[in-house]
Amino acid sequence: MISSQEGRAHNAKGAIVLEDLAKPNCPTCKGLGLYKVSVELNTYDRCACVLEALKKRRSERMLQDAGMSQDLTAMTFESFQVACTAQRNFLSRTQAWIEQPLGTLIFCGSNGCGKTHLARAALNTWLASGRSGGLINLPYFFGRVRASYAQEETPDLMALTANAELLVIDELGTEYHGRTDWAKAAVYELINFRYSADLPTIITTNLGSRNGKADRGTLEKDLNRLYSLEYSNAITSRLLDRGKTEILFFNSIPDYRLLGLTEASP
Ligand SMILES: [Zn+2]
Image 1: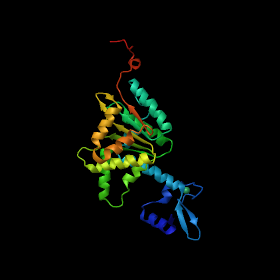
Image 2: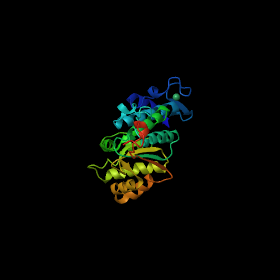
Image 3: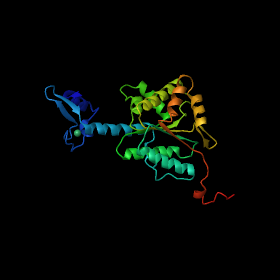
Image 4: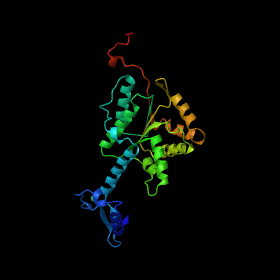
């Protein structure tokens, strides 16, 4: 809750211009962005239309911060090229999951199997329905978070990301090159928060895959190796929780129907 004085101060400084965020024809605030909550105390609160606009702006900024905004919109379910049975399965499972996202969806497979495309397509579908969300690429994201600590008055990127309505974590397992335990702690914080709060999360990773094959045992081994010491058990158990996580393992078995061949062909 903010007083009318504060509202004006913000406007004067240009930090938050409520009128710019408010819907011009909003029935509650008439485009002012504020409505009076107490006549005696002369206090105002930000209108729901402003909160909605702020949420949208945050998710857009998150995409920009992750450096992923340009080509993101081109990645849709329609533009996904299905070349094998595994990819057809990935596509249909992802489309079903995003309809009613529960817990975590993990794409586990080698580079080039289409997991990032599908994760972005799912996010686009979600955003198109008017909800907020974002995608982070971990190495880039942690660079941004660290840089933000050095600046004053920056938004808390970690909190913003942890609370996103839908979060896509792209390339889990690539964040440690040249980094310290700090990154492990941050990954733990993100995953644990979202797991505990039941917030929908999509993770892509090539952990758990070898030579075009991926499986649960290898994923578990890789996670334990990477998130060693105090975080390994916690991260692994959350990510492999069968009750809250669906894992799609990519195994590149050629789809003979799509290649126009029969299985008996040489
Ligand atoms: Zn309003």
